[in-house]
Length: 381
Image 1 (cartoon, rainbow, N blue to C red):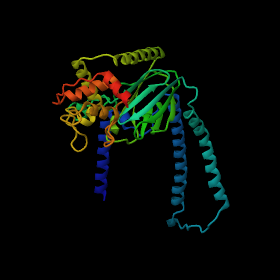
Image 2: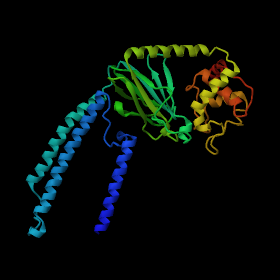
Image 3: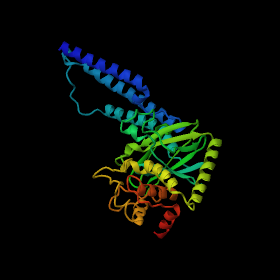
Image 4: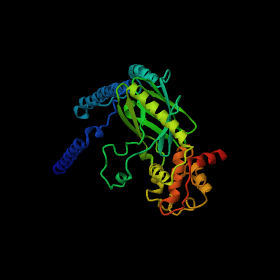
């Protein structure tokens, strides 16, 4: 028996040492089991409340188990004690009812105040609509023309283990959500297809994004920085590939960024009437394809047999142009996995990616689709 105990002790010691070494190598914070303290006032208040309740529970556990073990040891059978035979005790009933009630009331006071603060979304300085898509986020800055999608930017070569993983593997995006510090920001959270959840631990914000319903949350960030999160609701095959990056910047920098994005949006509207060359469309279309389409149809256009159809040689990409436009802009009723990109991409990007699909992967259709063609097709719907 002693030999077995020694083996068990050696195994546990080895496991602890291995865990410690791995934690030191990869960062101890990745192995934490406690809540994130966060960087906002609400996050820190929530953490403090959590620790307060935790230590109250620890104290209750120590008292209850202490009394129990003491009673078991002090009144053990070997000392001649016999169990008391009784069914009711008014004093005991009163004690174990009144004392827990008082403890719960004392715990409820700070908890209620914290919950009130969490749900107080009034008097916000900035409103941002967040919409979940499979598998990306869309951000609309209400009251301005600024609107964009945020996609995973981790290279597919890292995901397929062809390159080493980066520091922020699967937690990096092409377009972060930029917000100002020292302002109350209200998030209006919904979804376009299935249920998602917008979760940024450092901000203490976690809300379900439900189609047809708008949830509210808010934050106020005091210090500039980059804060990362993820979708926290299983939403399909690429659920793990829709990260969230929030970039908090000084108010002056935010105002400059917002003005630049508004100017870009205005320029994009002007580009709708521009005629692009074939090479310009191909170059832009390749970027849009790799960002938007490659996750399903693969970078080489071969798709996933039995799951996602290939672009190379497909009847859509090599068939009538109207059918191709309809598929990309309206989506597919027969295959819900093929989303409607008419609202997700600009007319310029739609024209570019359709041109690219019809001329890449050996399709060589020779077609050129201009943004005005996309606009005219939408107007016919």
